[in-house]
Length: 400
Image 1 (cartoon, rainbow, N blue to C red):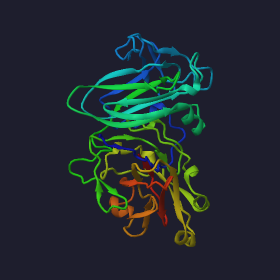
Image 2: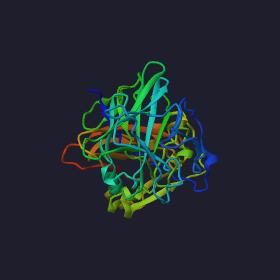
Image 3: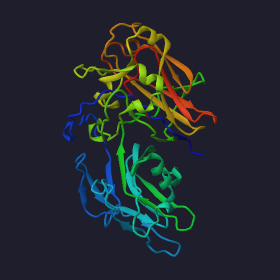
Image 4: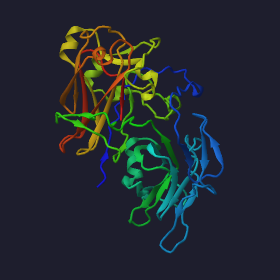
């Protein structure tokens, strides 16, 4: 059985400058593959949000193979009803089918992001509640028994996207992404957009010279092998605004803001934001493409009250499924302290003490970005993952 790791992307990011626009992207990495498919569309469309070109699948090399039990092509193309998202690529059209359909992509060897975009609306002749399907890719089941209605309704948004990481082996290879409707009556599968973007080797996977991430509660290392598929759950900008995909380092990752919504009540009462937008970051411990610079220029801390520093923790709570391993990546950069030992704190993940952090000691100085990886498995009785940072400072970013 191929292992699947569900990484909990806890990217505690720093403050984002609100004036950044599409042209301000920090392209320190250029992906080998940058494929964007607007499903159910023809020709090309330019996204006004990031200026990327999306290619329609109609009459293209990416047109899906789709056959029912008697060999007929059955998928349908629909436009969604009018809403605030109908003019936003790739949500302008959808491909829907009561039968299985498959997209095939020829890719180079290496690790890739796979992003699937869904606008779950009432498409003509398709009952919204019947969107029940699975998605498979490269031998992995990325979305088993996906209930689009339940997922969208629970999140309170009209659109969702799912991001995965997987590895392509052995030269130019064909990657099939297959959408399989449930066997329930009138069930169908649909998709609005598919994105495939290469990532730097071993960005999230364990390099041969490394023992892997720290395994919470196990006292050992947890290597993330190239035969592992990962799903991103949270990528959070701690202490700042969102970082949109065009402001990433070339991989089009989205970094959510408003981390306060994940803080527990006591943490909200004693936390303060840190910011040093003029600091000159010095990369050396980690590659510059690891996260946008804005991630490392802001953060969150307990206030300067000494009683609060001794008596309280800063705690984020994330609701996740139990019995899966989660990769938790914490991004740090010291903005105020210059000496080893001046600021130390304990990191708890899943209610287990794991590490004593001294960012200057880890990085080698002020303004030097660094990150730490941890893997945690939550038992059945726990419905959420808790990340607690004792004493003053907290990481700059949290990333799956």
